[in-house]
Length: 179
Ligand code: HEM
Image (cartoon, rainbow, N blue to C red):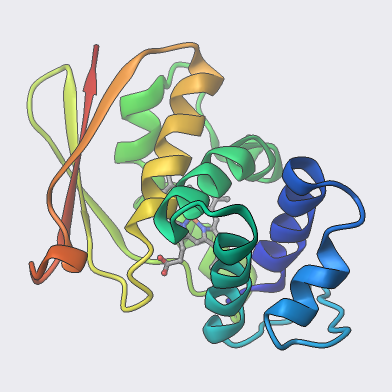
């Protein structure tokens, strides 16, 4: 996983658990005094270990933490790629264009970045369905980013996941409907 995500995870832990929480969390995760820099990549297992440690520390389920983390990082992700975002877009346009416009450019700009392929189907003017099958199985992060994007546009959305890899489906399907 890209160092940007680890840098954001530290920022998230500082905000949610306090500025002193990161070092003990690294130790709890078995990662000693690791320092993450945003220009490198690190094993996916380290995100999993950190989220598991945060789950043990807070009593929250790992999926709840990942979803909250996704919502937390959305403003920074939007800020980083602001120039690619069209002024006329709203939540559903943004999500429907993530793959072709944003994740594609993220991959072109940085060969180490491997954001998931997010295929979207627009079913009418009020719903987008996101098809997600990344081997990282982080659909909770996707749900959180989606909520963060909706908050950015000041729109209410209903996010459901009728199919999910964690429930045995081959891929996840996340429905995002304007409320
Ligand atoms: C401005 C908007 C966005 C930017 C700049 C962005 C960028 C990134 C970057 C840099 C990563 C890390 C890739 C790596 O570790 O190699 C990532 C991961 C991810 N992105 Fe995005 N993203 C954006 C929007 C979205 C949206 C709207 C969704 C969901 C619909 C999404 C879903 C995910 C997920 C689930 C991951 C975790 C890794 C995985 O599942 O394989 N992203 N993104």
